[in-house]
Length: 167
Image (cartoon, rainbow, N blue to C red; front, top):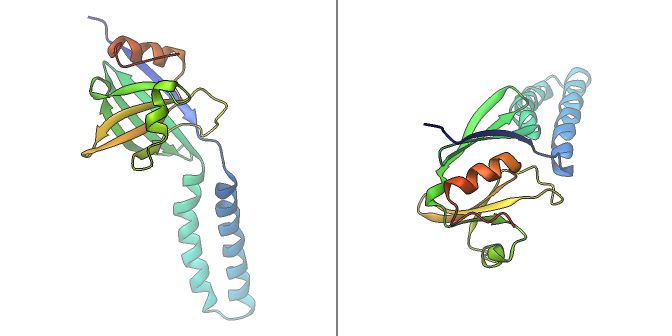
């Protein structure tokens, strides 16, 4: 029996907010260290706190999403700084209401729905072809934004052909 299997790694593009947070924390930490050495040693405590914040925040500015699709089960992992991995979402494609490109007319109702939870696991680049998956997660309807390549899109279409539109 052949399994439908596809794996894809999508790098999230850095935003201005990511850069400000990353370099701002580094500069604030360096300034706190200098102020602690030259002004008041108690400021070194703030430098330690900022250093700990850098340890946890900076890896989250370098993110990749790994899509793993096996026989209708879709798993999304977030890889931070190419070292830490965390499973962020897992769902069954056969339970999805709709899978279509974000700019498709089939997604018009969902794109305008302000009450729907949106989970973006794409590169964030609007120039790339991104898909929306409408499904129920945690008793709420969600729109999951993905950026599949051609092989992954075809595997998705084979699993749920009546709900997947590749136009």
